[in-house]
Length: 354
Image (cartoon, rainbow, N blue to C red; front, side, top):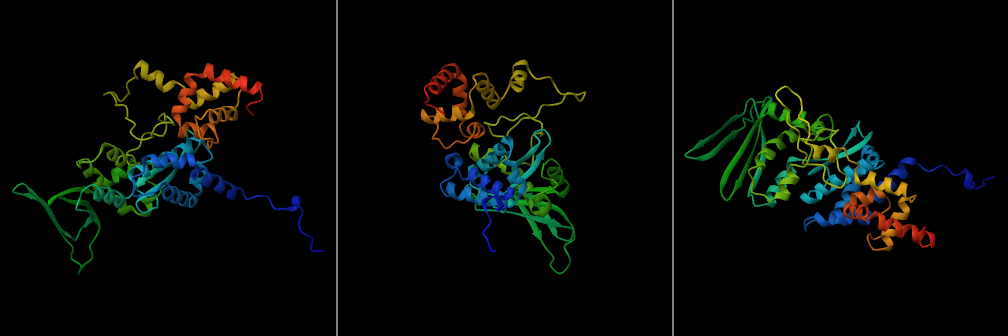
C-alpha cells in the first residue's frame, strides 16, 4: 500500500532551482574565474569574488533572469569585472549589483553601483590618511572657507535640538597633512540620482542618504592622483550611464561611452561615414553565427574544434560565453574562417568531430 512513487510519478524539477544551479555554474566556471583573476588585486582571490557574486545573484530573481539572455550574461560579467578591477566585493556594502530591464534587448541587464564606503576604501588604499563624508542639516553650525590659502571647514552639531532636514552633503580628505573638501547641495545630488538607471530601485531607494554622500566623494575623486585604470573603475558605475539603446559591443566594457553632442537647433549631428558603418555593422557574435549557418556547421562543432586545437581549454559551453571570455579567439576565427571552416568540414567527414 505504501508503494514508492515510480519515476513517472516523481515531481517535476523546480524551474527556479534549475535556474539557480545554472547561474551558479556559469559564475563558478573556470572561464569566469580566469577572467576575474586577470584584473583582481592581490588582496582578493578569484574564488572569494565569485562566491560573493553568486550569493548576491541568488538573492535577486531579476539578477538570475539576466543570465537567461546573452546580453544579460555579458552585463553581469562586465559588472563583476568592474568590481574585480576595483577590488571591491559586490556584497551590498561596498558595491551593489543592480538589475534593470532593457526594453531594447527585452531582458534584464546588470549594472554595478559603488557605495560611498567603497569609494572611501579605494581612497584609503591609495595613500589618503583620512576620508569621510557627512550630511549638514538645518540646525547644524557649518562653515567652509579658505584662510591664508589653506582650506578650513567647521561642522558642529547641536545635539540638544533636532537637526532638521539635510541640505548639504560633503566629504573631507586628508593627505600628507593637507585638508581638502567637496560640498554639494541636496538638489545637486538629486540631479545625480535622476541620471541613474537605478534611481527608482536599489541603494538610491533603500539607502538614499548614503548614496547622496557618495556624490561629493566621486566628484572630488577627479582631483585624486590615481592610476588611470582605477579612475576608470570609479567612473564605471551607473551615476552617468549611456542611454539604454546605445550599441554595446559584448567583447568590450560597457562603460566609457561618449554621448553625441547636440547642435544648437536640438538635433544630433550625423555620425561620420566610417563611424556610421561601425555602428551599423553586425557584432562578432552575429557574424560568427552567420558564418556557421552558411557552412552548415553548429556552435558545438566550433567549440569542439577550438578545444581540440588548444585555442580554448574546453570549458566554454556556448558561443555567447566564448564571445564574452575570449573575444580575441572569435576575431581570429572570423579572420581565418575560410581555412578553419575547411578543416572543420574535413574533420567531420572523417568522424573526428561530433
